[in-house]
Length: 367
Image 1: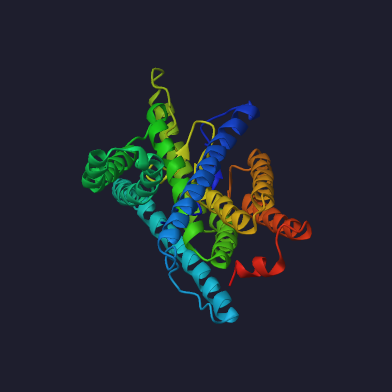
Image 2 (image 1 turned 90 degrees about the horizontal axis):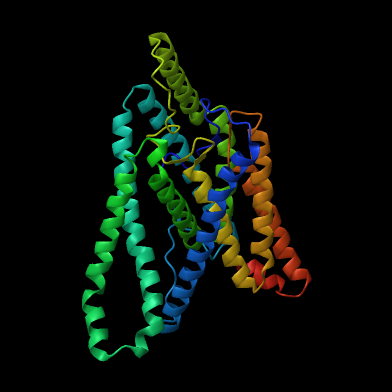
């Protein structure tokens, strides 16, 4: 995914004096994403707990591209570092490729590519989260169902699950064809759910040290990408194109033509409104951080890691928005992620100081 570190920006063609409206437009989707990520993380952990009760040897799948060596603390750290480099490299190479495609004018190809990628991803999410939610829902009433109904559910469960996954995959593809603000609510809704799902998925299926280093590494890369790297080139090219279109309308002198701005980089997965644009990567990694805090909080039987990480993240979000009033584009990850991680660590320390957990349990989270 080449847009993991997409920055946040204010469209050039919109002039809005009401900073309160912009702030609400900026905060609202982030709040929804984080709530969804917490819910999905809790549901997934509950589902895995049930599977572990049924099979004590069950362990959640590890999606690390480079396995860590649990027998060697140095191997754990080295594996986590290599995984971080892997994702940063993907973000960098993906950004370079996307910039090249945009500059060559192959926007239609980019739209089709990301539409198909979204379709495949939504199909996978439909199967994964659909199975979790349906299993937990049915298990609540299973004992009260008559035998014939239980048999019917067993027979139709898999086909219905696949049908559901196919339908939301189609919806994901269709949403990518929407390129105007008056109909973009569908794509924005899909972006919100997608960010929460992928963030929770990463947090629960990567070792904690790997997850932390990925968050830190991509936040640092986000700074480079927006100010010096591929995203800067994409942003500048998008603004140049928009300016040329506006200038052309002015030259034609058609007073009946009203220049209506389109979403920033409609070929990319971006949450877009007339007031603000937020990259999918911001959603994904905000939710990943919060989901990591959920895992740590449950492991330590303490609310402090989650609560404090949310506070730190939103402090970073608010400072990012404040700076966004002066800058036309900013990396969306660094301040919220570093604020969230710092407060998450504070929450872990506070849990230890108050006697809610012990040091061995904390160390055991990372080995």
